[in-house]
Length: 337
Length: 294
Image 1 (tube, rainbow over the protein chains, first blue to last red):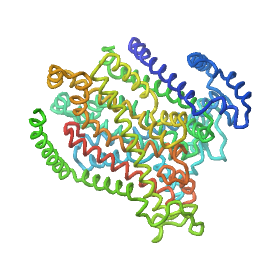
Image 2: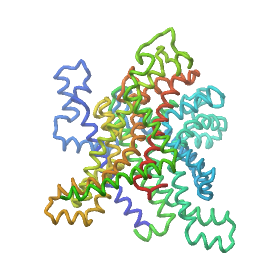
Image 3: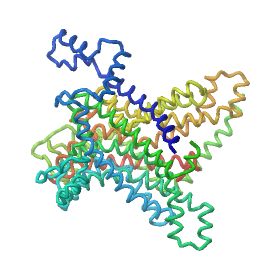
């Protein structure tokens, strides 16, 4: 098992190197002269030259790349022009908001999609099966920002059930003391039930939006792999031995059918992390996505590059975790390694 | 000589394809419906500006923020512009972005993948490495980064959307070229003295082509979503240009005060277009490759 994890870690390294090279190229591909850009419109040629030397832009590209890597190892992602804060600090402060939202979104979508896929597979071509297909096709066709806005209109404006889509917590509540950065967990640790409920209320709509978006691949994969497992010999044997259909489906089939579903989680995370940016904009969520969008609109590039790098590193780590999880669940993968 | 010999079976193949297509459409009326919708979208894209009742940029403050009515089917926005006209006119730009990016990635990914699968070795390793590196990013995030770096224009949205789809095309093309590398007809062509490039162009590419075309229609929906997402966060298209993503973004601020039609109609148009492309892609795949039906 340890061997497998080590091997998988080794495989993640080329991806990380690739990610660092691409983000570096993105910083250097800025239109025009970055030094002139950083100096501002009113700068003299002399000031631009000073900034060029200060930023190391007069050095050869390889040396610039070396400096970039050294900066990264020190956790230095540059400074935001608009806020004047180091990008790494701001990303760290805002990451829990994004993580809480994304993970809850994933949870929502698993809770809906997996049972839906199982039911669709146990009764192929039934009304339920068609419903599952329609829901999953609609799910991928809905622009995630549009779903969010429709939910806001229905549940906030028409029904008044949801709070206004303005961030993580209503102004009447104070943030729970920082432990994990997840308001749901922190407010429970502090024993502050009203804050827990308030932050849950804020989370429901954005998490549901993300959940609907990532529903389709999970439901489709669950259905397909359940269908494959249900037609295999050991299921026939289990049925023939007179086991109840509940035992056959849940204990025998479900556990085997979950393996391909876990593999698709990697792709689902790629969608989720991207959709997260749009959902954060719709719900004014103070996460790293909305930070990057604000910076983009202000043509402030250091936060955008930091954001892209953070997301890519997170995604590589998530894929690593999924593979390790897969190895933990399926002994065959361990034996191969 | 060879052309003469080859043409009768090709005609038969075409007739068989038409027959098969008719069969698929009659078996699966959804594909027929999607195709009708597709024709409508193409018509709107081509003729849109000539069909709409109002100038999409003409503002009229006395008519601002009117709900849908007989004069303005989809209502008017905060500047009194007719939303129906704007939604219809926007079709051209959105459709153009999707088609252009899909064609671009078709050319890039198709050639790189076919070359990788056919030549193997270093070509394969380099193409594979590029594809893996792109796949290491969450795709929408990478597209954001690319547009931010290259500059905030429609052209760069097309390029970014093409780049994030590159691995998909390269991998499919690579796999398809790889299985045909040692095929009898390739060996025969090689023995008759054709160069590698000639074999690639005249033997391998025509075989990989239909599979990639299906892939194009399957990724059209994603391309349009990706582009609209980028313009929703303020990249690429600039107001007052009518485009679905940016119209939803402009309408978003009115949702909380109940003026839903501003964001709803462009969003719904986007949804219908993506839905249509996805259905059409599935239908096309059934026609070209019935085994992959899910």
